[in-house]
Length: 193
Image 1: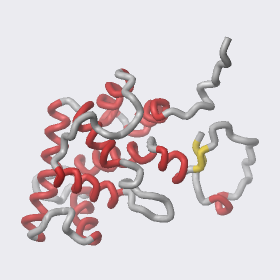
Image 2: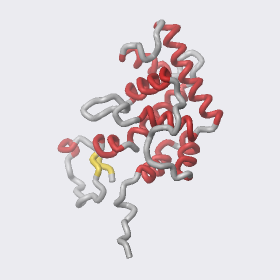
Image 3: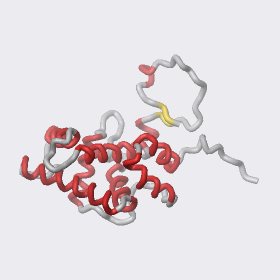
């Protein structure tokens, strides 16, 4: 008879994804629930390419602006653009997919009209200005919900990646003793388990 593992001490992307649905509400719950119900194999890449090369670059640039590389790896290093492509191509309903793709197109179109170049070709400061306008709902033809949706996908993809769980956070599969007075200044990171 084999040893039984305590499910609370074994990290899986599936349990992390399930736990994060409560953080993001219903907007991502439906596609995420479908992915979990299908018991999809772990990993971020889509089964087939869905985005064009330009869209993939745009999603990567948006992801990195939302969660940039600092003293820990950013969204690109964590594979977030692949996660977004997988979610959009494999788990979104047609209407959700169309809304997301329309939003990407509107951001790109704004950049061409305003700056005469693509989002990817803009400086980091210009990209941040465009995303700030999108966040505030001030980008013509684009509601503020597009940026919120992108941010949720980036955060979800990042914190369910190995980098997000084990490098950004300190991963302890079995936490040690509880110390309620442990000074945050000594660790400067949030622990996950």
